[in-house]
Image (cartoon, rainbow, N blue to C red):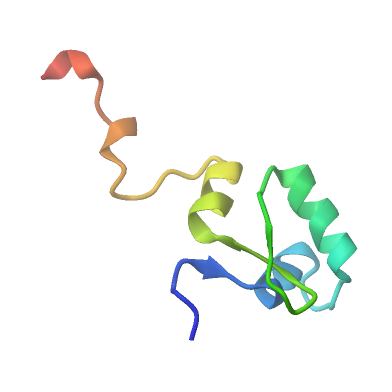
Length: 74
């Protein structure tokens, strides 16, 4: 069982080209264009984390208070 924050190759394929099964090279090119860092999974695929995907796409975590407050309010 994978850790819940891991985004496996199969999910990356679906994000890259919904309804298709793109090759690893296609997924890697898509991720690189989006700024998403990848790691090899040892089974011919790649993986990343949901945090890396969110960061690359400019999505802050719901509990990320750093984006909500300036240091001058303390």
